[in-house]
Length: 313
Image (cartoon, rainbow, N blue to C red; front, side, top):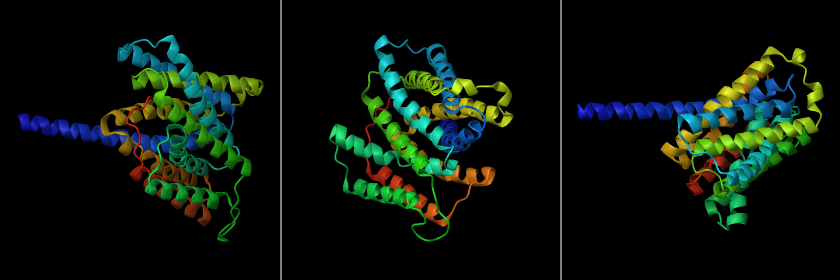
């Protein structure tokens, strides 16, 4: 009976791991298309800010009252707003804005270079010199970005990408990397759910303030919002933020950083496929070659880069 119980527990754990990876791979890969659908009729920063503020408040309530986590100290809120500012206002906000100019699949592909930035930031800020394998991965990755941004570089067909959108995505990936590196050693709660909730709240508030500063409230007319945009926003709140982040945190705590970080090279594949199938986004040969370079780079860096095991949301 004990052996049978152990087998059942092992199968149950394996099922949870598979389910969590499916959530992170598929849900986070689909958020880029959901963002595109959302901003078709909803203002970008106000809708994104609402997404993270609502999700953050719900996750905060779960952490405090369901998980019985201790209330955060006042000193935690400043770092939470700083991390949320880089991760969400700078990172996600630039992604949302960029999708007015570039397809959702390309947006996901640019964000896949986050591990490249993080390695360089850790080298500069923490003096952790990358290994030779990581240097190779960085070179491959930036070669992929160069191919992606070069007009018909390979003469394989009509290839063009909006330069402003591409620069926004490079800024987004850089901001997300800064926020990720900063949050590791910031004065945040040690419990991942509470830390993540506070960063969502901080980032959500900052995004709403940015939307108000840009005059988005003047375009906030419910009568103009389509059912598709509203449905996409609800999907982003419930699935992209709540379920996706919950699955991500659970994986970090149960299978480790290295295996969990594989989402970085699966999400772009999912995003490109969904954009092609559901939104008619075109995928030319040059983009496909650039995507291959970027994904190979992320895989190489994931294999050779030893990241700190402590992560705060």
